[in-house]
Length: 275
Image 1 (cartoon, rainbow, N blue to C red):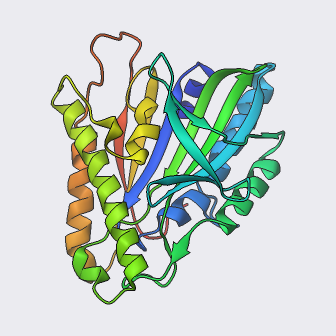
Image 2 (tube, rainbow, N blue to C red):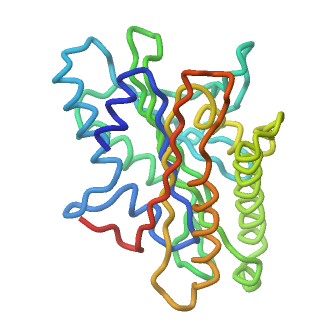
């Protein structure tokens, strides 16, 4: 994580998102456990290590929200509903999002644990406790009130096939359809960027709208493709790898902006992340 964190201190917007079927270990990859630190912990450690080494006056703030059924909810403020709005410069702002000032790795992890405790989960045909929302954690570096750099972690809800939801409740099927719709919108945006189309449909879903600054401007984006080791999930695994391969081939974002240095990597991780 250190090269990405260093880039964030150099005024770059960093995004890391985990994609894969439900139950493939996306939340585990992000959160980890006591003996196996996840990306949240490693990023927090690198942030404060870099902050102390550079002796900068930057302050660290954390926000945590989810996208559930096309709506934004603040996980740190009693699931208060939020709204995504574009300003005159086409920057997407989350209206009403609460930010918490933090001064240590422990502070960040306490905030994250609280947010995860109120995140929307449910039972599916493939998993007894599946995340039914996209969770977005943002670590902001600010100089007074001005944004200096931002690190975003997106724990995407698990992708599903229609055959996996036949025996589920009506609400679970609705959730699954909304999840797949937003993931399809993300695919369409990546395809449009890859083909250098004049229009990129970021407004196709709330997910792509809030991820807009992960693909344009001064940014670096990393994709983690989570796959299950089970033979029963071969179709899911192939779909995930094809998705990751398309992202990996994304070499340019916006030729008119010289400062753009977006990076799209695909890391193939097992169900349980390695040390």
